[in-house]
Length: 596
Image (cartoon, rainbow, N blue to C red; front, side):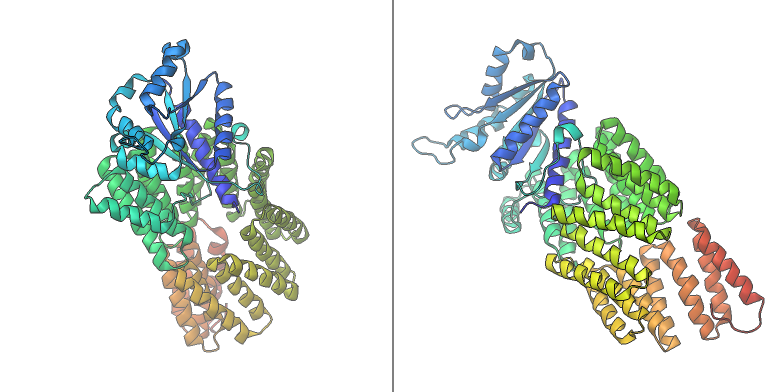
């Protein structure tokens, strides 16, 4: 069954294709569209032809002839009979029929496909006379053969755009009307099996070639590992494959591909929030290239990604600045989904800063965009965010209402991950309302979903939430059991932030204050390692200083409070600053040890 991510990724590549076509008028630009689904292919072609005609572009289709499968010949025949093309009017040419060429020789010296690839390779220079963008539609198997057998033509490509088969059970967005792009979908579905990619890489490397197709295959390999990884080892294999792709793209001067790979590697580093500095470095490199080649869409997506990193690093004002820059780009190029996603991100920052009314305003703006373009997943995600603000404002009944609305959307579109996440949010509200048995019920439902879809991070987070409820109910031994299960998951998938949070819970639950402080220090070390300033300050303020006072370590507790205040000041987080100052005053005003 098609996933929501498949549909969203098709949207992303459709918009990239449209932007490339609009930017290529008056020049030759060879664009390769890969799609094995003929119905989807026809729908996409009709949609971009309709959209381009509305902008006064001419659109033509040509088919490669079986008896003489030459792209140049087909284009020359078209230009000869179309005066508008001879006059250089804005036009886009769609090329079809390549997948219908026979791959077997029959009674000829070469197969029709072999002749087609030969023409591409040896008549590449002759294509310079055609000053318009050309979209060559092919299937995945033909893509690999094309890159191997016509490497000179392949090196001229202006971009490769992948479109995955879609099931009728998933409602597709209207690409031509909404001009949407998902800036949150991290994985591009290439379609070639991992084993086939590895075989092709081995075959090409055995020939001693450092070709563009090899760089593409390493990028595809990274995505294949990324789509299937459920361990730190497979994640590392994905990282190594991206690094090999990036090295080849750098060496071969493939700037557009290099920027895309850097962006995707940054996304992978940032996914678990454990290597944010590496993520930011990748994003900065990608941003420079996107600016250099004039890819405003890539620039907008990368600016938003940098904003996400800065938000995680508690550099909120800088994050807002990047989001505003990205927002301007999205508005300029007409990407309303990108605009909606960025408005939601701005709302997230404002909510963290306790500027709840401003956050709600941004969320409502984003919600209106999502509803207008029919992006139901975005609508559901924003309803969750609005529910979070309402819960923060202690408007729990309204929060539950929004969560239930989101839950209905997720169930309707078959987004089981969204459904699981919403069940967690509902459980959190119920726990806040001291309805612990109902909260546990929702958490257990969410846990079943996470296990069923193989989301081990979600499973770990839910086990931790269950542990929190059990801890509240004074069922400490059961709570510790769930925390230990969660800790094992976090360590296995390499989520150091999750590991730190559980170690903090361990520290709070220990009867032995010395052992408790040891766990809290371990958590602090991890927070320091990943650069989470907010968690460092909070851990020092509420837990480490308290444990130190319980052990009679008054000076150490004061030092922890001062450190917490300094950290909170660095991120301009007033609640922590005020709390630290009040406790320091309280400790200094009494001779007796205090428990915070």
